[in-house]
Amino acid sequence: MDDELNVTYITLGGYLEVQKYRYLYFVIMFTVYILIICCNSTIVCLIVIHRNLHEPMYIFIAALLINSVLYSTNIYPKLLIDFLTENQIITYPLCLFQACLYYTLATSEFLLLSAMAYDRYVSICKPLQYPTVMRKTTIKVFLVSAWLVPACELAVAVVLYANVKLCHSTLKGLFCNSSGYTLQCVPSVVLSIYGVFTLLNIGLFPMLFILFTYTRILIISYRSCNNVRKKAAQTCLPHLLVLINFSCLITYDVIVVRLESDFPKLARLIMTLQMIMYHPLFNPFIYGLKMKEISKHLKGLLFQVKSH
Figure (cartoon, one colour):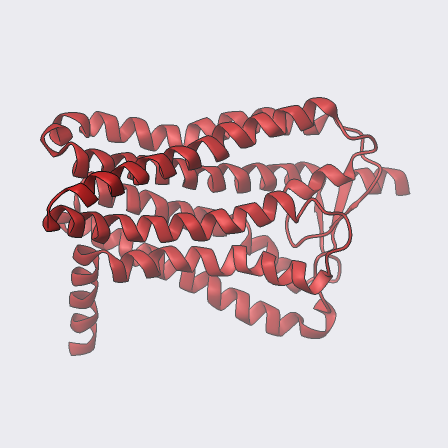
């Protein structure tokens, strides 16, 4: 019976003194979750309502913010339940499902940032071709691909993981992620190879494409007039800030999460909380303040609220 329980249920062992601070954790995380939904949804609504924001760049920003809400919704409800329960456990199939959604939405962010980088490249470096290149069909293809490609590739990983024999039942985390590989009795060579392929295909390659694109934008804008340089700085800086922030957090997830020891539990908890608290709030903050048109409409909304 114990062996069956160990195989079926996974214990989430990343919590620190949850029995003592459960209500404090719950209130903080619930507040953050509501803030994430409200902040991201506000910017998305502004983009939907105002016709002058119905441009490819703002559509991709809206998709990115919707992605942040989905990313948080995959984690927070289970997290909040765990704070109020005696045992922080999850069934193995649900753990695989959560991990699949987590990495699907995380890699979707890279692909959406790649689409935004390409949009900025065409807009700044080839402005005359922009209307013909960035058509509605192109935008739809980018959006669908950003979610569909990672989902398909990670679904294959889930099928491979489903057939793996487990000898351990405790994850060193608050939710299911790549540390699930430590549950295996014997590390799977097929899973390791496929994991590297997936990481390169929907992680590293999009990042290299983004860096190459922005390098080209910087070179061309440097050689151009002040107006082009100003446009490049205004529209590219927020995307670069979001990219750098997210890349650092994903690097932590890929490298540090896989360390079975030699990493303090408190430090692991702090870094994990940054991934699920800080980043989903960082995107609407950056785009709300740094994107001129969005900032203008956001200030107008705040003034309307104050006047009422």
